Image 1 (cartoon, rainbow, N blue to C red):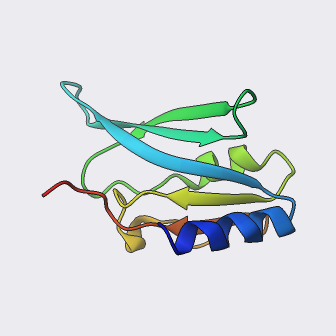
Image 2: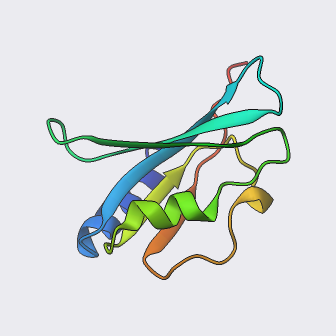
Length: 108
């Protein structure tokens, strides 16, 4: 984070893009499995939070429609947490969405 984030933030600022942090939480005790996908963006005082309930489980992909909905006609740089493997990220996106996968932050 100390090396990657400043570069991502500078790139987003140069593109006049919104910077979103995206993560997911598993809903426990529901059948079928479901995830809550959350995005947080914006400066303090003007924070935007978006979420979506999506099919979950260990093989669940990051929904393309969630990322498309974030753009709202603007360029978006999305920092995606490590809860999705690289193969679970969408391959084809609208040209205004750029994904930056981050490593998993598991505790030892």
